Image (cartoon, rainbow, N blue to C red; front, side, top):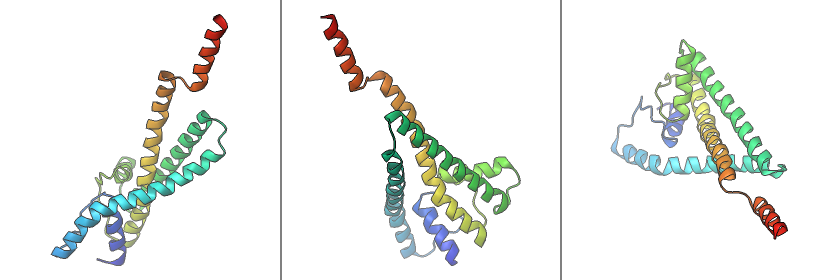
Length: 178
């Protein structure tokens, strides 16, 4: 492997995309790759999760209310995801030579969801930018869709289970009627 392909391969396998356009041949490397896939993806995703959660925690320090905090995180993750998809589409058009928006979008989003439907070209700029977009796009995908789920589930939970403030208001009303 060239140095850039080795970097691409380690990110590709470590994050579980698995294009598989070049595989390992010797037995020791195959065993190492299996170990790296099992442990590496957990370590890579855990460290990225810690990093991005710390960024989101910094946002929450300045938040005035839970709703404001939830909305701020939702919007920030949305912009981050849109940036990542835009970067992936740029990669698809200019470095993968995909001829239309649909193919470039499939390239970007399938990379970030780790489906890897379109294999990148085996050339330095292509592999380098794809490696960078994987490192940005996969966490962005996880953060964005996690925030979407959290946003809507929290709204449902707020309706379904009143907060302690609402409970005390109900108790105050009941006490006033007694």
